[in-house]
Image (cartoon, rainbow, N blue to C red; front, side, top):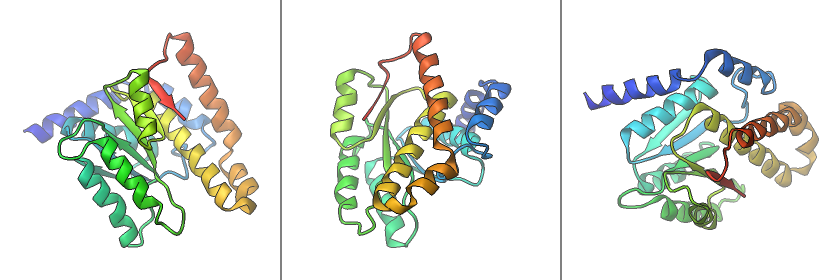
Length: 220
């Protein structure tokens, strides 16, 4: 019963966005079916089943059904899943959506442990970790960034915020890859049409400022 209720909530939240608006946005993101061709492995970490279900549904809506969206219920499970991928020679997660307030091991501690573990990786792989939390003050955002997270986003998530954080995640992934492989910079940037992605991001930010947004979303 509880699982069915969570799925119903997820469907209602995802369907609340305008289909026409979604299609137009996705079409403008470089001409790819999902708009983010280099993002296919996401980890959602949250101790609330409804939050996990909603996030997974929205991510599949944006990235497509073929994307690998895993979940974890606390920081310990998140650490286990991140490190297990390396132990089985699987590619690392492109992005982790990390809740902060969780029992046993919170998002701050989990991020710190993941960052320490990543230092030992010979390939220099580093997951993009986004704090997704109800604590939305400037101090909260600063604490998340100081703990090693790349971005801070206030709950509740919606499709617009999902697209925004994925756009920034993909940009960071390309820039990091290019710093490790300088010869691939021009081809990588051209391949995903980064300029169009940044143009879209600027339009989204402009719309947010016009609507009085701000103060909820911090990043480095």
